[in-house]
Image 1 (cartoon, one colour):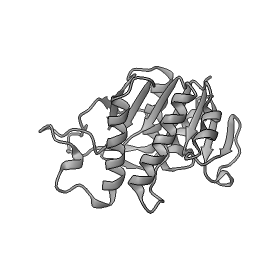
Image 2 (image 1 turned 60 degrees about the vertical axis):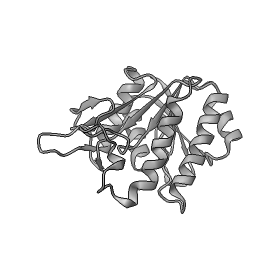
Image 3 (image 1 turned 90 degrees about the horizontal axis):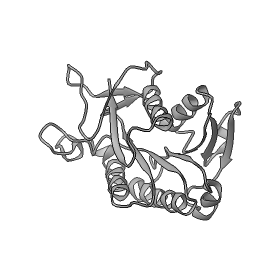
Image 4 (image 1 turned 135 degrees about the horizontal axis):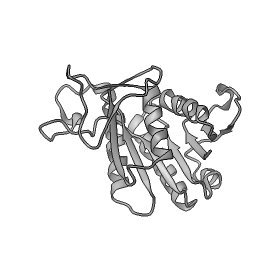
Length: 213
């Protein structure tokens, strides 16, 4: 049993990670902007907090072993600006609080295609995901360029959809994984499983990894 702090625990991916963590018997502190949206469950502590309040967040994270950052800026007007500002707050707080390890829900857009270019730079990359993708790309760069915080960054497959855990998927590092039909897909249930596997048995310290069916 471990104690985990999950930031953005009520979101699309954050809620799947929270469900998986509780199913594995971990103690979870769920940090959300609207605590009334989260159902009370055994093993779950819900904290209403704006993650841009760096001082309050630092206090909450003080000496915590594992923090999972799963927030997104999708609901905001300036998606990229909000995401980068909020992540900066998370990074500053986690560093000041001497967090043992920060695991980040990343994007697929920085994954490499067979020709070595990024998915983000392909001509048909969807415009509606560009702001989020560029924000996640900057965060990955920020993590790679520092050495004060132990981190892992999990990029999903190109398509992540709502679905239960199957439990069988492939892991990779910086290259986009595709199946025999050329599709790159994963459910949020299996994404959560891979994230919790990494929490329990670290294989990707200070690096990015990815998964797909």
